[in-house]
Length: 271
Image (cartoon, rainbow, N blue to C red; front, side, top):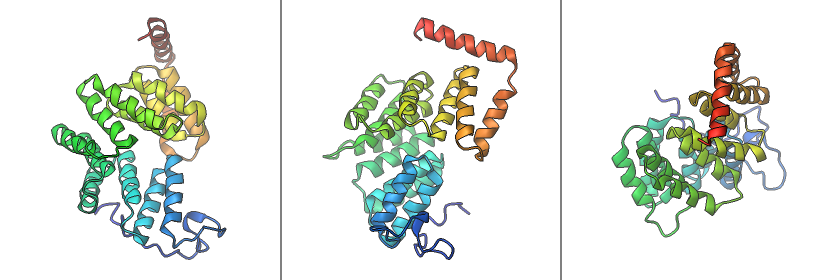
């Protein structure tokens, strides 16, 4: 049975113990737990904190109140993709398309789920469809960038650049670009974008963790250790952060030195 069987139709009724407040919010003006737009705002806030589990539940609660909110469907799909629940994301993208068949964001989410499930040609077809809308936002461009990056196409950078142009001051778009490069295995391109995000949002533990993963994939163990340590310090109770830090602490001095030398060589050579 799917761990996400409650998606879309989660009971929006406040449970005993939360004081009748969705997501633990107060009862101030506009904080109505039966208002789907209010719950949607809470979901968006959780998403921007990279708390995808919480955001997913809030998007689902939003849809329990209003099943016709496209933004909540898209948010739900993005959360599943960020949680690397790719088969589940594909299932729900197909459901979303029954109502929002021409939505560029829904089609892009389906394309991303497909390519991460190994269906490149089908993913390209849905990505093509997402680009035919009159108004295409940043998300379809990031998705197309990741898909093309997986094929080695030089036009991937153009797509990522288009996404960044649409919201040049929004760090979230920069983050999604970094993640797109990371998932495509282009760690050298992902790292500087992650660093740009963390220069303005240094409290994003998950971003530090993903930066550490990139460094580790590049063989830069010293940088990886530093990034994992930052993540673990920000959220000490998150097991995957503490485990990553512990693994790096167990790295021998020779490995650490080799990683530092690789980083120095990359900096000198400009690679």
